[in-house]
Amino acid sequence: MADTPLLEVKDLSVHFATGADTVAAVKGVSFHLERGETLSLVGESGSGKTVTALSVLQLLPYPRASHPTGSIKFKGTEVVGAPEAVMRTIRGNRIGMVFQEPMTSLNPLHSIEKQIGEVLEIHGGITGDARRARILELLALVGLPEAERRLSALPHELSGGQRQRVMIAMALAFEPDILIADEPTTALDVTIQAQILALLTDLQKRLGMAMLFITHDLAIVRRLGGRVCVMKDGAIVEQGDVKEVFTTPTHDYTKHLMAAQPKGPPPVAVETAPEVVSVTDLKVWFPIKRGLIRRVVGHIKAVDGVSLTVRAGQTLGIVGESGSGKTTLGLAILRLLGSEGAITFEGSRIDGIPTKDLRPLRKHMQVVFQDPFGSLSPRLSIGQIIGEGLSVHRIGTPAERTEAVAAALQDVGLDPRIQDRYPHEFSGGQRQRVAIARAMVLRPRFIVLDEPTSALDVSVQAQIVDLLRALQEKYRLAYLFISHDLRVVRALADSVLVMKDGVVKEKGATAQVFSDPADPYTRALLAAALELKAVK
Image (cartoon, rainbow, N blue to C red; front, side):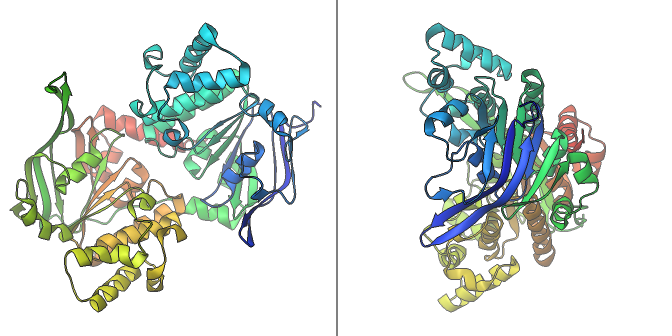
């Protein structure tokens, strides 16, 4: 038994029945995990890494999902096909799992205390004062500040990093032998990413547990160290020690992933180019109302005195953590939020003008949102989605609109023949191209890009960055690029503005700010990003 791996997966296959057809999601995967070891499963969306992890806990939608071949043994006990009673002794007790998006994993109607307490009661029968004491102990273990005060908090009252700490506390409730972490930092800012990764590695050492880490981010794999399995199309194409795999990769797909990082330098902006958008002392304050008559007792200063200029052919990057005011700034410039301060578009003030006068300008100022699946109507075809703006602004005849939609699809590298298909039929990168085409079809001069690559695989990120560069060069577009991913900002933006708590902490040429940051907050952001790249 001493030589038996903690977790042993052999020749695992997973098939999903879809009507009369069968989809092979995992194909003959084999790996093992030793006590105290870190193993990363890395690959792009659809590679089968999450399906493999869910198979370990038998959480797939059986019987639609099946295992034609393979074995999963935890401490020598066969998991595949094990009775539910056996799995209940393993799930949560011996193997814990942290899911990708804590906001959807946590019940929005239950307090933090109730949700962690439910785990303790179901798996360990812990109730009353002992349960509350253990909850506080777990929250202290994961470093949640003011834990006792936050017991009654609902998930939406916590930040993304705090919610993820709660999820980790739930997973560690019974000090499991294995922690499965499924993309636990994907939606987090770079500084919070670094904190969560440091927390996980510290807890791993303190508790002596093994960790199976699922991610598409190669920088995180480097940071974690240990061993790595690279997955593609449901199969492991390469595995080994992280340092060896990343230093001398042998498989073409691994080399492709490593080469797919967004690359700079960004296009050089022409300083004499005409100003497209300028903002002076912009403020967006949200009132805090209390009491029976809802008296204003203060303000949340989401944007507080920001000034900027964006010229034709220029990309201004707006960086900062969640809650810094980045998105609020972009929406205010587009007049989608009320604000104070001067907003000038192509030489004319647009702040304060009536909606009916603003509407004709909308086609010249467009936006691409973070989540393409959420921003595209599932009930409209691709052609209808992209052509909607043409119809609203009454541009062209129906035949001319169809031609314009086809041209926009070609601009973003998609086949014009897909116009009759629907968003769910496309990958994340393809949907983001559709969202960009929807903005481009109106031939705008200014586009706000709100985290357009954060939800995408690294290779798709690089493709979207290249696409945005090409469109900017072709049409002399002015971009306001909002992101917390400093690697993407460095590759696309020629100048950068760093925000924190609604104010500008630093601004200037991207190369200058990144190489010699003047503000401590900028230095902290860059240090966190560089730490993620370090190899153990």
